[in-house]
Image (tube, rainbow, N blue to C red; front, top):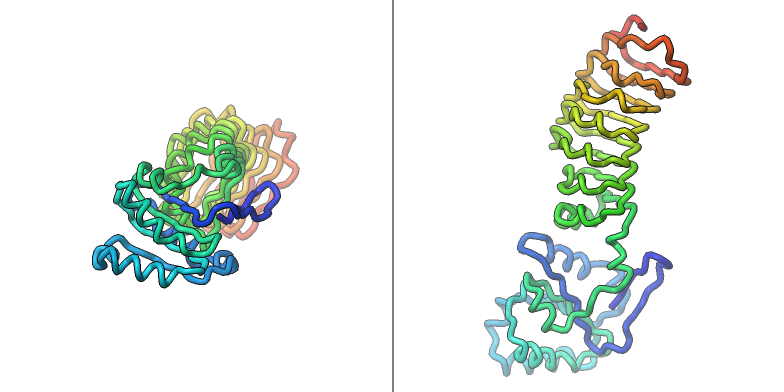
Length: 323
């Protein structure tokens, strides 16, 4: 089994296993087959020099008799290192599995069997091993980033079910995704980037539970109209950036007096006409407004504000006066 250990990024092989079984267990529609397919087609798998790769559905085995199947497997696998994916396995008959696995023992050492199933029991009788230690440590993961690349389908299938388990997560970036359920449990989260969520109309009120949040960046979310009033409970929020959100207009926020935002960046907000007083706090040191074509008014800036170091206003043609 090929394992990538995040601590030193080296490969670990289990040479003592002749043919090892790797189960993928989960409810229907979770993405088990998708994950198996990504492994099946991965370049790193090709580099393991499998002589033969096979993908078996349970329907195809029904068409062959046991003797015909035995003969075909033995002649095909003899002395060859193989990767076999058995997709959607339901049979929980342990003796039958032992009988079937014996047919695969003629393959070369290092052969792998990936099994997708909805049943933990099926996975256990097939001889799957417990997760390696570095995978179990994911529960203590502190940083996670989901880019739009070859892994994006895993993100869409799996993250929604599991994100709330990473209780120690301190940084997260959602790119071209939806706002994930369960994020309110991430009370250690510091920076949060939400980028390209085209269907995101609002942030959940539960965002107030992110009590350690220091940075909130929202970019290219065309349906987002406003921030929830509960954002006023994010007492550690220091940096707020909202950019390229066509429908966005700043709304009233309760409890905003407790916020001490230091950096505010507003850009490419075509419907923004005015900015609320709460954005100008006693701790605000950097304030940037860029490309807001309909912005006509800035609120009164407190006379006793001594923290402002930088005020930048660019491409706001309707803004003719400063307070």
